[in-house]
Each structure stands twice: as structure tokens, then as C-alpha cells.
Amino acid sequence: MVKQFMIDSAHSSLGPATLLTDSGDLCGECPVWDATSQKLYWTDCVGLKFHCFDWSSGAYRTLRSGLEIYGFRINQHGGFVITNTSGVWLWDGTNEPRLVASEAEGARLQLNDCCADSTGRLITASFYYNPAGDYELGRLIGVDPTGRVRVLDDGFHLANGIGLSPDERTLYVTDTVARQIRAYDYDAPTGAVARRRVLVEVPDDEGIPDGLAVDSEGFLWSAQWYGGCVVRYDPDGSVERRIPVPAKQTSSVAFGGPELKHLLITSAAQSEKLPVMPRGYDPDCGPFGGGVYQADAGIAGQLQRPAAIRLPA
Image: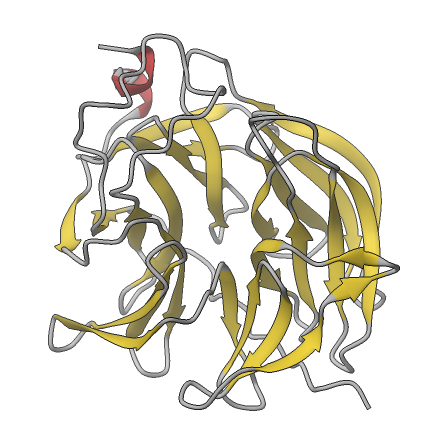
């Protein structure tokens, strides 16, 4: 058994995650909790499905099939803001999405995960990773409420989970292939970033960092693809605990439930064989995942900030 399934007992006071709903996702991603409706939304970005789980009834349903969604946030103006491999879009949840932007400063927007700040700005990042050959590096992108798109930084191999500290002074961005979670000084009124540094460097005998969430204490929870766990890091980047998940391809995490103390964790059923797999990892033997899991975090998360994006004038 490889190291990513070994849990440090000194930092693992909570039990493993259990199955919430078996959605059979090829690549479940981007769980978003709606505290108003007490519903969880998430996407299967490979299976092209968009799901909803009703906390009160315990039932889930697929709201849309055939629409590519890699990241999204609830939009204050109605519906959702979504990111995918062709740009940023507004989607009312029923009709066809409307394009906000497909490029930024001449660079095409092939986008992955996202989050929003208190001004309604969307923060996302592009990825062009190609394990078979050369590829350009991705960029960190800000989408203002007016629909204006700006490049904030560059140099990402495979940009992934993005989150903000509770005071919004620190922005966290994952580079999965680099095995890093990076931190920036962040200015919410302007959307500017500064002082990029590496906060977390995941060892190459563990899984790779994927989606993340930041709790109310300012600690990061990072889903570890190939690792079968969610890792909690303190604001200095040290491992505080690990929550085991019965899915080797653990993909993303959010806080939900009535008190925001449930970890809601997506996973992926389709095995991905990448050069960044940890030593000893078996990509041919599961369980890989596909369902959504839950665990009692014992700590409250933050409400995910909604976006407030309009189409450009």
C-alpha cells in the first residue's frame, strides 16, 4: 500500500469519509453549497453532467447533461457563472449559456476551477497541460463584475483549486502537476495580487493536490487526487490532519450542511494515468471513486462567496 493511504494518527482525530450519494461521476468536481436552499451542486466535467443534492430529502438529481462545466459559482444576478475549456459563461440553469469571454490579453481561456470574492469578482485560472508533449503555461485570471477579464499572473502547469482566506487578504491557487499550493497577497477592492510564494509542496510519494476549501479558522482543506484523502493545512502550510476517503481519485471539497461543518467531497470513477502519479500507485485497481462523500469536519467552513458577473457592455 502506498504512502498516500497511510494516515498520521497524531493528526487524524476524525473518522473516514462515508458515501453521501453514488452519482457515478467520471470526474466529479467543484462542489458548491447553497446555504439558502440547503442544496449541494457539483459537476461531472468529463461526463458532462451537472448535479444537485437536496440536504432535506437526501435525494440527488441531474439538472443538465451535455454541458461542459469545470468550475462554477452561484451568480447574484441569477443562475450561475461557469468556467470550461472555452471560456467564462453565464448560465440561467435552463437555457443555453451566454459567453462572457473566450480570451484574455490574446490568450485563450481554457479554464478549470474558480472562486469569487466579496465584490462578486470571479477568480479562475487556465490550464494547457499535455502529458504527451510540450504545452504552454496557464494564467491566473480575474473576471470583474462588468465582465472585464484580466491576467493576474502566469506560470501554471495545471491550475486547480482556488480559495480565499476569511479576511480575503490571501489567495490560494493549486498547481496540481507542480504539486504546489501557492499563496498571494490579495486586494479585494481592486482584484490585484502580489508576493507569490509556495505555501505547500506535496511530496512525490503522496497524491497530488486538487480542489480546495478554506475554513472559518483560515486553514486549507485540499483534496488529494491519487491520495484517497483530504489534507488540512494550517496557514503556514504545515499538515494539521488528514481525512481518509474511500476513493483514490479524491477531487474537490466544500463545506456544507446546516452548520457548515460537513466536508462534502467529490471524486472520479475514470482512472487517469498521468506521469505525476506517486511511486507505487496502481492506476488499474480501484476503488477510484465516482460518488460524493461526507465527513464531519468538527470545524465550520466559510460560505462560498457568490459571483456577480454581467455580460460585457
